[in-house]
Image 1 (cartoon, one colour):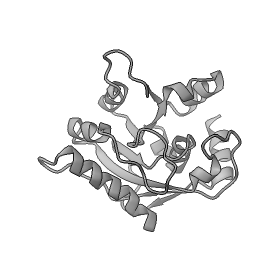
Image 2 (cartoon, helix red, strand yellow):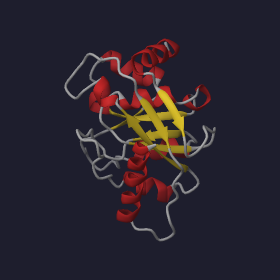
Image 3 (cartoon, rainbow, N blue to C red):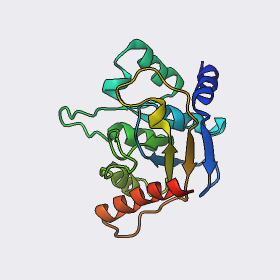
Length: 198
């Protein structure tokens, strides 16, 4: 099923990967990218080489991706996604599932905006990326820019439209010693936006 989906995704989007700032490498990473469509996690997954797909888990909004049995099955069985609650319930840290995945050695795909945007520029990044960078300094932080995916599956639409898409991966970021949250998140957001020009 994963090979069928990979072929379908590449037919619809092209799913071109451009490794401009770092090579594809089997090391533990946090890929972080702009977020404009529910297709983002699918396109990011498809852009990775096979050896990286097997060790990389995308973050998926639990309320959306478990809304139907098919969505739940595909995100569980094919993408091995990490579900996150967008609505806070109780005392559980929303980062807990991501922390568990990183602790077990997985790489993850993260969308630091937290929710989909409607504009060319990403919304301000939320603090999750900063908190994970602090907790896992050994994990490589790789920015990425997803191009054109919002035209494949515009917000509110259910039928994808074939459009050539790409994912550009940039140079890794490192959290500076003593760097505050605001400065780091602004720098991370800028690193993602800078990839639009490449």
